[in-house]
Image (cartoon, rainbow, N blue to C red; front, side):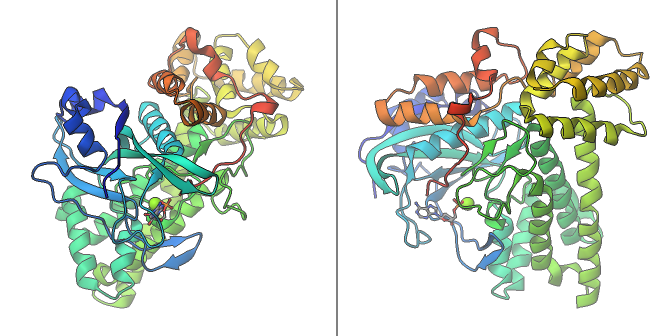
Length: 468
Ligand code: AMP
Ligand code: MG
């Protein structure tokens, strides 16, 4: 089913160049026909992928690309092989009761947040383009403008893809899928004594690193179902995701996450749970006997907590400006988080302003805390700890900290404003400005300082929606 009047909202020119595409050709009427799903590009054989998944802990044997279509693969200029997929271009055999379409709001959110994640250094699917379809679609809120996102990923294979075949008892298909994933994503695993085990270990290691990065920037995915968990270790399926403003470890944004299963502080554990589902699908490939398979899977899964903790501790240590590992560091960092929680201090700004404190400018950081005396005591201990690394100058330390503590994140109230302007007035200027600012999250950008500011109480957008 064609969309009626595709119009370009955004074309990610740097990404287009990386992929070897001519941005002008993509923005032409022929290009737009492809980016909206109205025309199949030459040589492509589009397909919708089947997958299953555990949604909020409950197994659903058949999900699949209900509103996405994989156009094919391209080899980027650097040799990486990437999937190109349209999201929202129309119904597929997996649409179930859905319309296969995407609303403008969620498309803009995915474009903004995925590109921000890339600039922040977090593995993620990318956004190549967003177009409005010219059609209205029906959602809970009423009729909304439709849009199509062109998404680029190392792979769209999910834990749920393996679950689809495993739940049907089709071990040969699981083997074929694992072989494909190894060749495409984990080529070194092919030379291991047990390639499926090395593959599982690879996914576990990549996922541990990914989640540590999320935790370090206050990102909340919101719907970490196994069908939204990438085998490539990339952040995928931006739905009700949002960044935390005031630090509260139990933060939940998603309107449907009533039990807080996917709360900020639960993400590391949930990722482990999802990896356990992946391991289960691979059991028949992991050993000669059932017991041998189980033992191998268990050993691989047992490595996750330490892998995550190490990556997270390293990330946090860099955030507070520590170059070395010393006893007591984790307590020091835990104490800071406790003060932040007590004061409802803004997560991003606390760490950004701590960079200034490394150079002796503490006033703005102290101003974040309603009662700074607890923070003052902490700062004394922190300075004593920094003094033990006196080969690092204050300026060097502050610079290193500013390279890991962003000034700019896609704050939820900003995303809401951008979506409202686009949806209500057809004004995309705020969207473009936000995307531009988020390209350099670690730079000062004084002209855009307002984007670094947390929401005022009446600006807070505390809930997000899947938008499906
Ligand atoms: P999500 O959790 O948003 O990634 O989506 C869960 C499942 O619902 C996936 O299989 C999607 O393809 C499917 N889905 C979501 N929205 C739609 C829609 N508008 N039409 C058809 N399928 C959809
Ligand atoms: Mg999904």
